Image (tube, rainbow, N blue to C red; front, side, top):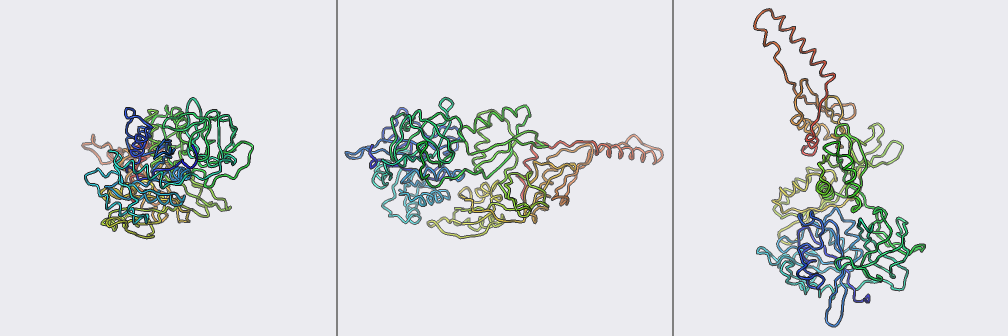
Length: 597
């Protein structure tokens, strides 16, 4: 296939706006999938993707399309839709020359639609606006078209109306891809340079690397290397996605496909890396970054007997998802487990759900926390992924927390409610603009820790389900933070420690203790719950002991008899308080999450 007849494009959309259904319908229209083989969400392999209606692991597919007397090769490079996978989306967009911007005709432009559209504009892609789901009874295609025209500044005639469910408008979409998206640039005679935009692990063949050839060509038997990791290997198989993997002789400039070699470690293949001939120096493609975990939490088996099963499950899962990290850790309260790092909250939920489903594990998950930076007295800066890792206050020179750019899209009648919500969580207002006649986009800067747990749920409940959000890490900023310890019976419980503002520590500590008092059962002796910063106790709650009426048998006689029994009981409780142990139930560890300041 000559380069002039190749079109590489992506589909960007908010969750549940019909991206996967549109891709399925295009496969059916181009004859890549027979009617009898067709099923919904054809490119989504995992059960979680089908149940939630989201794309977690991107797929690629090559479609042969004939227009007039010309044959075209349309390469769809699918992308995840959620903000957690922004880096993967950016690498997939870097492999394209155009993008379909799909918007639901009943819901309109959402926060993640705007974020991904800006990402496509940054990569200088040709954007084709598409209004999907026009068959719905409450669809408003004309109003949504006006929103797209205002947002993109495009001509109203460029907006294509489709229904991926019924197939209406699909021919127009394919024609627009051929007409409007430019062919891939690149030099067919230059040294090989390929962009790695994804990779998966196969139990029998090892690592399968997804590439887009930028310059030159690659064929079976070539010795290649990855610039960032420096790993070299021989290509044993090469092919394209149609949508199943189909081997071919070579991939040339502009084409998209896969390569297989003698690679067994997925961590050696980095998304965004450049593939080039071995023992050849080339200028690497721009935009490569190491994926960074932003949210951390502890995963512990509910029974210590399952620790080895958890380790095997994490190792197996990491073979197909190199973007999450894990390392062993020990908690005084929960025993042996793993401290895991994730790209974001959705990524954490998916990994947790996959572990429980695929490996049949019952897990205890600690409160999620973000990555802080601590500047020590000697000038060294360290990353802190858990409150238990915070060094002694005397050794800290400065405490830095991550700040995000938050975009919230809401119906205009909820603007005041959301502004109050965000400002209560230390958000700094940055601007407001109206998208169409009925919705507003509010911009804030806010500490990541303030939105990492329940902000999305509160946003949804405050806007009757219509609010959407998107965020982007901006910078680390100095703040007056501290580590607050929770002591149960004078023993610090590391799993309950939190990092918070010094000005909020007392209020937050008291709220946590009140919640813990309800969760920890009473003992035969008084149990003291304390919140402390360093050696200073900020709040205290007591769990009253059970009390036996030891004087019940004294129905008469001198008062000294009763006093003697009470003193004996007092001595016994004192001794019990010294040697007694308090067991904290597992559900109490969620108290930190559910506590509102």
